[in-house]
Length: 327
Length: 266
Image 1 (cartoon, one colour):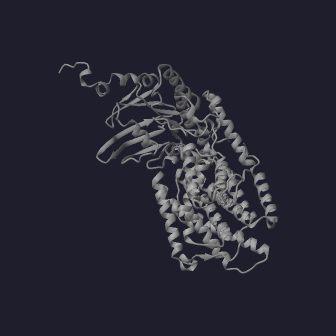
Image 2 (spheres, one colour):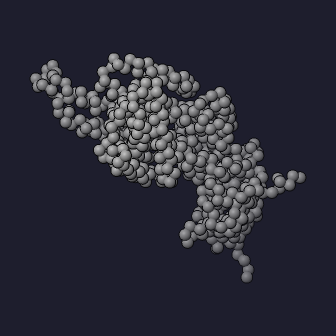
Image 3 (cartoon, rainbow over the protein chains, first blue to last red):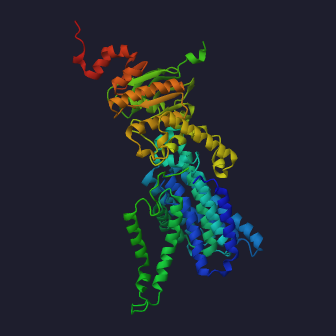
């Protein structure tokens, strides 16, 4: 794919999400919320894929950036009462962007001093940083500290979620599919050689961190205005790990795969929950034959991950291709 | 005669680097003229690759200075030095293994990009025009070196000799004035070596650039270099034409040991 019609595709995606959001009233609200989480997880996974997958910088701090965006956007919209739909939309867009920008600034602050580190050292430092952010929110009385912060407005809808997801996919793909963007992959493949080819590796790494953090912040804002209640523990390191798992499962540096992984991993726990609730099956005398799934849901989820990693270490959705990164 | 063209392209003065107590390169003076092919030889551990790393900014010299095209590049970052016109290959091939042959070369064009992130994001007319022109130039380079047919193959799938050649093509794509080749003949059979010598001469003629060659293989070095510097334990022990160097007793001693020197009457 030449990625020629990318802008057109983006517009189509935006129009489609607008259209769906107009008919959102007809969709079951549980389904709608699952859809929101799919969209939010797509944003998180695709943006982390720019850092971890394409640029090869192992970051475990994505939940931290998400928290910055979530709290920033929530604090902004909480200052306003009920507004007409247009004003609310503008406010929400502004709040999302503010959250994203603040997260990006945080990404820059974290990125500059730490990007000299490589591999597992960087992972540990970003992990520590994510925890620091969480602890800061946990002790910040202005945002409710450990009691949590309730978000007044449930502004998140299908349009914002999937519009933002489409923009994220567009930006990451457009960045990587250009002569400029090949630099990200060059940095991942061989930093010394990249530097010798005239690539400012530090700049590329910081760019990846800043762009990734921006979209994580955006996703945080969307998350805040859908769940409408923020607790610092929601942004702990398990959340970062969950995003990393999506990237690894989808295949590092494979955006379509990562999108699929985000969808599958959001649906999987929900699917198991549904399975546990099946009242009866023909041929099985017991009622709720899969009730055990309910209690062991997370165990099954973890086991599936182990099996997947053992059988498809290159990523579940990475197929053998003639060209790993077509132009 | 143009005065500028008589000045050496690269001049290293009293280049010294110490790693803790070890002086890897000591007081090295080195000059490379325009369109000149210079060899840097020496026994294992003599500091040849360290000199490369000093020139390309991978290491910073402890003492001394490096001047390229009349300006100091001492202490510059590696990517800046490449932008100034020094490109290199590596002793152990360092290609971008997951990228295609085409993309490996395309990455080096990064230096000549007029557009930046905004162009890549907006993907307007000028972006596509530039991408197309780069693509054409990459293909042209690949065709010159008979690598065109591999353009969509991942770089790691190439044979060893082709990978070496691809690394040279990638370095050339940065449009250097000086090309540094670090042991290009390593692991090559005699046929490939002959081919390599032909290739290096061809590059020098076609692109009108200077070449600094680090090499173990005497056949290659003596065969193509116009001037040779010999390093031993980080010190330059000899310099001159291949003929002069071949006869130099210090060089023979460094390579073969003292007892191989012609007997002297004292």
